[in-house]
Structures are given as structure tokens and as C-alpha cells.
Length: 120
Length: 123
Image (cartoon, rainbow over all chains, first blue to last red; front, side, top):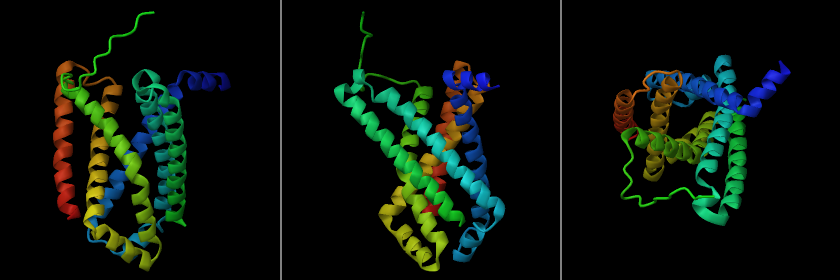
């Protein structure tokens, strides 16, 4: 089992599957949220506050924050290894990739904090 | 070692419609990446206190923020629909040239319509 998981990780199949799984989860979450908010369209503070008091919504909001962070880290990694390469933009590629990676980690931390702040 | 040929005259490169759809998926991803955090901060502000809610509704009434919000929502809808198309293709359907063309056109048209709807909702 451990070797199997390790092989999946080394070949990138685990990343491939997890990106799709997190995408499906986010699609479901945002479909439900959009449907709910369209039903209660001119929404006010009480509704918004009460919405994030429902336990199921709390759990799924934290989960969606985690899944957005994973998905965006993977996506930014794909984009930067495709476009910010030395043949394309020259010597600046490596520092540009590093800056973008650090920025994406900061941003992901922000998204996770927002997710936790929404539910407490 | 031979170098691969590089042809970068962007005005002469014509992407097929499926390619346009694919690059739009990436562009919308970058747009969402840049805009999601500020707007989730506004959502946190709005849901945590009554004063925060009024500050947030003041912010969302500014025209510049409305434009950014429409951009974010358009990007999200496009990424959503195009992501579903990519998932269907990952499972092995719609993989012929014709099906790819039709689904790419459908994706762009549908998300264009959705974006018009969103503009009318935001304003």
C-alpha cells in the first residue's frame, strides 16, 4: 500500500487525480451556494450570518478552502513551469518562478485563514 | 543538439477554437487566482459583523469594484464550464475533432451568456 501510494506520487498520478477530485468538489459546493443565494436573492446581514452558522455549511466551507488552496497551488505550478521557462523569457525565469511560488503560498494562506474566519 | 523551431509572430499564429478555449481556461485561472483573495476578504468582512456588512455593501456599490467583481464572476463561470468540458474529455468522451470544436464553441457561448446575466445581476 505504501509503495503503491509512493509510486502514484512519483509519477504525478496522485496530483492528477487530486486536482480533478478537488475540482469536482468545488463545482458541487459553488453550485449549491449559487442556487441558495439565487433563491434568497436580495440578501441581508442576518441571512448571510445565519447561513454560515449551519454545521454542514461550516464543514464544507473549510473543506472548500482547503481544496481551493490545493487546486490553485497545482494550477500555478503548471502555468509557471509552462510559461516562465528559460527558453521563453531568459535568465529571469528562475527568480520569477520563485517569486510567483512564494506569492501563491502567501495567497493560499490567506484563503485558508478566510475559510476559518467565515465559520468561527 | 538541434534547437526546436520557434515561430512567435502572434498575429500570424491562428489557434483552433479548441485551443482558444484551452488558453482562456488558463487565463481565467490566473484572473481567479489574483481576484479571489480580495473578494473572500470582503465576504469575511460582510459575514462577521453588522458594520462590516454595511462597509462591504458600500464597497460593492463602487463602480471599479463592480467591474472587478464582474471579471471575477465571468472568470469563475468560464472556468467552471470549461472545467466540466475538460473532465468529460478526461473520461474519454467528446475526443473527436468535431466534438472538440462544437463543445469549445458551446463553452464560450454559454459562458458569454452567463456573463451577460451576471452583469445585469451586479448592476
